Amino acid sequence: MPRVAVLNVVGLTRRLVGSSTPRIAAHLARFPSATIEPAFPGVTCTAQSDYLTGRTPADHGIVANGWYHRELAEVQFWKQSNHVVTAPKIWDQLRAEVPGFTCAQLFWWYNMYSTADYSITPRPAYPADGRKLFDVYSWPYDIRPAVKKELGEFPFATFWGPAAGQQSPQGGPDAASRWIAGSSRWTETNYSPTLSFVYLPHLDYNLQRLGPDSPAIDADLRLIDTLVGELLDFYAEHQVQVLILSEYGITAVNTPIHLNRMFRQQGWLTLKEELGREILDAGNSSVFAVADHQVAHIYINKPHLEPAVRQLLKETPGVAEILGPEEKRRHGIDHLRAGDLVAVSKEDAWFTYYYWDDETRAPDFARCVDIHRKPGYDPVELFLDPGIPLVKLKIAWRLLQKKLGFRMLMDVIPTDATLVRGSHGARPADPADWPLITGPMQAPSSTIRSTDVYDIIRRAVLGR
Image 1: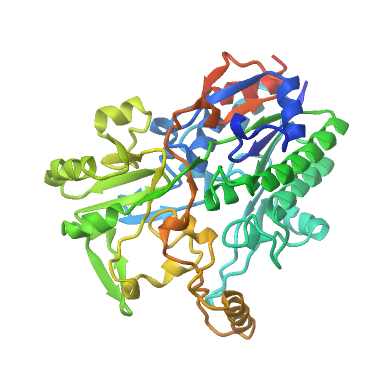
Image 2: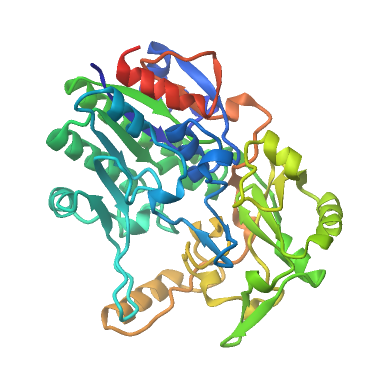
């Protein structure tokens, strides 16, 4: 029976495959391929959940990378428990069908407490003294010390933030993806799983930071192609078949949309003051938006305001669609976690979480890499603030403060949303900008739904 590795090359599209990606192009030419109609929304957690369950958010519940938890009255992003995915996973079905089946899940999301046999995922430690220590979580537990002994510490700063996709003291531009690839080789060598899921995020960073039209993207394509080629050779030596897929395509953007600032002007937001800063109080707000790339979930705590919210969204430049109950059903996102309305931007626009009007009143986390406190996704975390003189010297001083045991704030992130040049989440008009899948597989057609990926992977493992 075949053993299969699924390489998730984030952001890969047919438009990007060419002279800078000879190994990926050769794989695409050698094997069948299909273009994937993007998951909705076309973001990491939703796309991966579509692939791993064969269902849409209406069933698996992952309506975005984060959402408003109505019972907690809190916005939470990037949670890690697999229990939030409310549908069976592909490894559960295959384990029931294939005697001795095992699965490795390497940095795909919702990777804690899953029923996969082997897992490694980013997970800082948070001591009681307020420190944050970069690390990984594994199951079984003994994987963590063993894989770090071989590969060194996971270069967490290169996984997300200003160092991601850049040459930095923390590592090379592809350091995070290279470490994850190393962990996949380690897992194969030590456990030989039947099915491995491997996350390679390298393209994601500069496609958002610089945009897909930047000439600098060629260097990123060459780096990820080299890394994928190394994995193809490694898995061939171990008689493992390889599927290459992606989650979404990234398109050029030039228009940030600040929905929460608009709602504030209408008097719909409730803000509380903490140490002279403004904090969004979602539970007491009449209307607020949870922004995630090109999709924003609009939560309306006072239902009589819905017509006014709709009208405001219709009049907002950059908004392409407004999904109500019927439209949410058609998009497969009619789940309690979804917003009462869901706004979708035009292809060249995206939504910020920003809600403050006065920069001196912005929350302290706004200028930090802080994916959990921010009530929305923030791609501006990929940048260092160009307005800070000698910003790298400031970073060195902050790190020294941390090393000496002092409290410090790594406040080096700008709040200029116009810096961002690429985004995703809406469905691009051109299928050349959609995700793809290729490898030894049977696809129902040349263009498939995101939920069809589940059965393609299952059949690849079953040899059908």
